[in-house]
Image 1 (cartoon, helix red, strand yellow):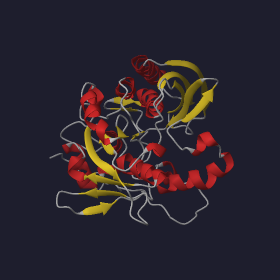
Image 2: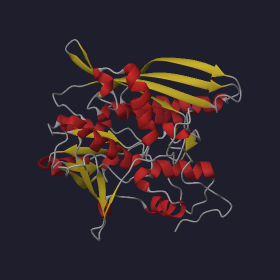
Image 3: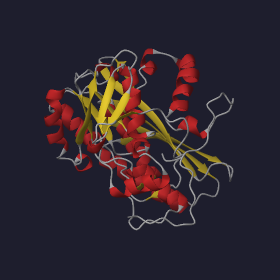
Image 4: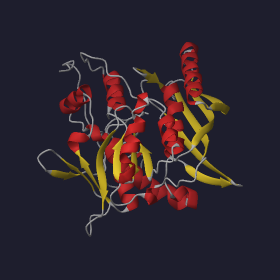
Length: 357
């Protein structure tokens, strides 16, 4: 079993008030209940339009006869370097993955850097080299960008923003609206490694084995499935809020219920051990190289067979299915254990692990 440094103290979830404080809290960026309230209560009333109202990982835009996907994301991770990656590789794979979840082939990216005065140029060079390498591996080009510098003590080293453009080159419609009762829920691999890796680095947790982030671009297996004509109803990458939050969002959007089998959800021994010691449920921990596919049951085996051919998805498994809700149970996600005991998942009200992406 992993061993913890006895001097380390950790609070599993940042405190937050459910009442209106009138100020931004860390939990507003955590992907949970307060994030949802911020989007629905503040942003959407100002910006509502058909593309934005879909609330997908990107916006689908019709430009002439071409269907494009446009996505953006910002990265404020701490620490900047971690086992398995850094803020640079994360910024590319994160936006590439958002485009892929909409069924698009990633093509072009923008790169915005906000640097703090005094940041080492050697570190910047290493991060930019990582960005270039990940972009090359993903087959995308960084075609425009911007650099700003803020006063020392006001930027925490480096923040990155990326925006991406992808092209939809098929006739499928891959959105939550396509989810149907009977659909299978397929998970691409084990969960929780990225968030737990960042936590162990940041808090100085001393484990007997090094936990490595799962950060990776996941567009190749997705596009491989689409190229073979396999029907995919919906996809979602499991970033902030982890598997639980992503599935809750999809269940609520589709007004259906999701039933998961807990024993089928892969969690590594290291992640499980950290979760048990610190009271953190791996279902809510962020991932940066994992996603779910919701697809018709007749496509299940074909999907699993194809995913086995890609390193990033070799651990893919079916973890549950979509059901028709009983009255008043629309949007419920339940997890059933080996003893047949079911528990309903809920949105986080606080921020478990801030600054993990």
